[in-house]
Length: 128
Image 1 (cartoon, rainbow, N blue to C red):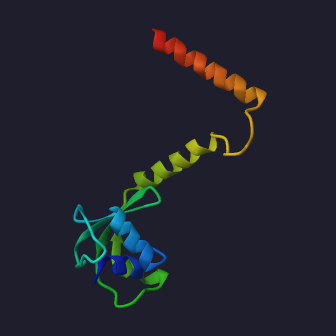
Image 2: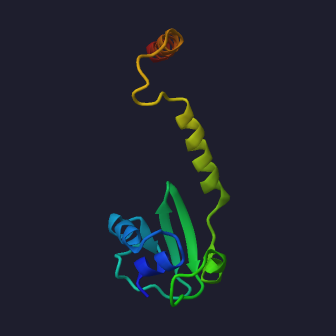
């Protein structure tokens, strides 16, 4: 079965065209080699799928005939993604909370003081 179709049938992507696009961008690897959308996938192969800033590591257990239900997905693939990958995503989420939203206007007086303090600290460190 084609890799784009396989990823669609095991519900990694919502549509087959999204799976095809991910392959073209180089986000899909089969046994650590970039995969084109038409590449055939076989039982026992290791997949690396980069999606939402996480490198999912999957092993092909079986090839489904059609798109499967969410409860049956684990019959066709084994997810070996390390827990650290998901922890890294949480850290990214928290780091983005600090920054201002685009279009939020000018910095407030407190923001301006924080920026000035940060710049003073960085200038002092670079001089030493």
